[in-house]
Length: 250
Image 1 (tube, rainbow, N blue to C red):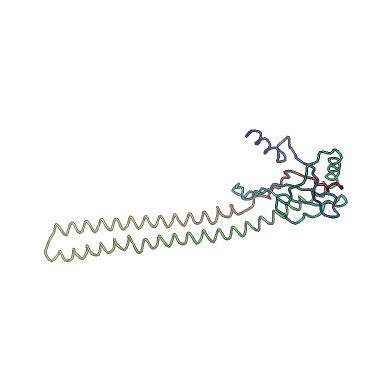
Image 2 (cartoon, rainbow, N blue to C red):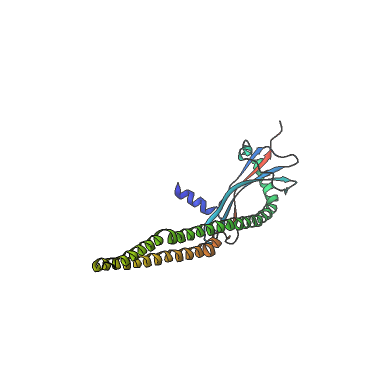
């Protein structure tokens, strides 16, 4: 079953070889002055420059046919309102549906081309808006992280070590009055160790700060522009077509 579904999915796309199509004929509600409705189910596929699929949608559009000419799509309606039509296997109905599709074919292809252009513009505007919002969020987040690192340097570890070094220096000065050479040497070593620790930690936090800056540059200048940029134009694939004829009279 998985293999069969995979083959069907591949063959739905043009250029894959052995394309398949599906169209049905039903009888149901049709607007006044329309001889039929073409219910066209399409799949929209949009990919960004990172080759990520960010838009994938299947929708059904109802296009009325009047005097063999395809009209503009009817207003969107929930899928459940499209149900209820009965499938017909009457050869005359199928022949009539085939004639309608043949007459409406050029208009349908032209409409799909226009729909693809409009979809491209719509997705680009949406990507531009979402990309700007994403850049603001990321920039604010990295600013907060930089502030946290700076606060950590200034308020916690560094301040405590500096205070401890100052206390040890004060004790050293007091010890000189009593000539406690061994104690002074110990305090001196402790001061040197803490100064080394202070230097190591300062260097470590500076590395973190630089790493945050590099990551901010990577995200804001390389990743997000590619993520919110449309690669080429979106694809619009017809999935299924239903020709809905009016109900027969009593």
